[in-house]
Image (cartoon, rainbow over all chains, first blue to last red):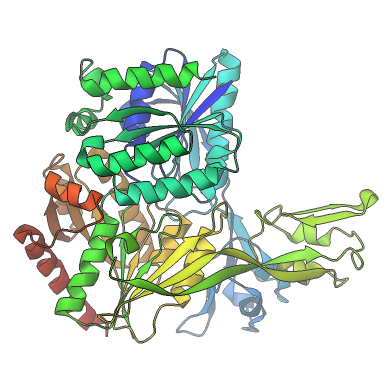
Length: 290
Length: 291
């Protein structure tokens, strides 16, 4: 099986619009939205949800005040400063600061702290006009997005195996931290979407350094290349030095936004646009380089 | 007490960095020089690109405490394994094997209290750096830089914020994109949050998620629509319906985008200046209510 993950380092470079377009071009593909933190792919793919699963997030501790003697043992052991003395003198745990280590629960001499798991994280298996899609919805402010990324990717790969489909196309998260690391483990190919800005280049450099510790074959496209030709050249050179094939330079085109507003991919919105033609070539090259 | 403003967005690439740096400059000019900008987007910190006149004067290593198991004392009882909620410890008694997986450890310290044999020793493990950029005109830029391949971005943000200058009258926290724990860490304890969005379907969708989060955190907030004119008016309908304060509208301009691309911010455009004046004055007023 071949998993292709679309990443960028910097946010807002066009990962999701490009992933959706590639999905429209693919004949046989399972699609995965591994940007679980701010998932947008479904806005274009309009999935029909077939399965909904609860994702067990980390623990959150709570103090039951009736038995609390205010001994402060929990406050002393908590390394996340999550336990606070309230104005009325009682102790309370801030659920957003609690990491779910359950240490306070174990050390409380009155056994008056208990933990529970949030159940407001979901992941889904859906059908779309381009194939099956696995995606997720995270509760606001949740921990563990890395584990949820692993979950949606596993689900996508299982569907591909069942249906005998060779390609999984994954829309990755921004950044280089925990969710990105989870989106990379075991993926075969990475497509970097780079915008020709100083920030875009800086962030791509950090992403490439991270990619160095993984085995994926790396490819790149420069999006909105004509916004700044000087930086586009700088990026092209940098890619060459690092032996990364530059598959296309996509022009800035407001049709990309118009397509999004119409809940369509650029391929459907304007099959004859320059970007459509370029992306056809990108998809072919991504799949021929095995 | 410093007045703390956090800039957040949900969707990436909406203009958090631009807004943070422009506001920082506006505050220096029109409000106070005792202002500090803190770049909490530690995975991809970019504020420094737009402040070339600020130079690094100090770098400070940020570490986490990670336990190591002393095999001379370990009795392979596995109590540490039972207490570790992050599955970071492997102990195999028949093989006399005991090890901590650094990348899974959250430094909670539970294993140290669990261990009855004095076999857990903590040592410092680097997760990144805090970079101090200075310039006479303000209290400078404090930047967090996550060590590549570390997944401890949330912890780094927490440590970074502790290094903020206590003398500051105003502190701006430039947050990472998204709605999960690193964003919470960045905006928590701020007095006001500015959400930067763009008028596209993706922008609106992610704005709604972020509004939900900020409301749960019970922090006052307002919205700046960046790249105005690029998408649709749905975003304004939403803001109106939810009675959310629209702080400003920054028009989309290809000329501006091209300047940004070269690491420059536009200061000559009148509409931009007017918008930042409006936003800045609102913040100034809000700060009076807080201090």
